[in-house]
Length: 72
Image (cartoon, rainbow, N blue to C red):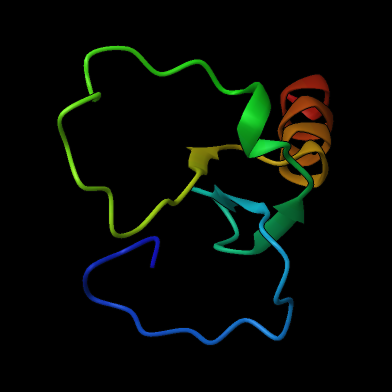
């Protein structure tokens, strides 16, 4: 879940991350090796869920912004 106000289902069953574009709202999947992510300070915790997600602006929207700025 990326947003608490949205419910989405993902057909990809292997672990992966998500990137949500703040401009167009599209969600992009990306591969990640969870074993390569360094965690510290959670040794005594029971982890029940692991999610990796980022928010920002996708390359298509960045290109559109650059084109719009050039036209000004």
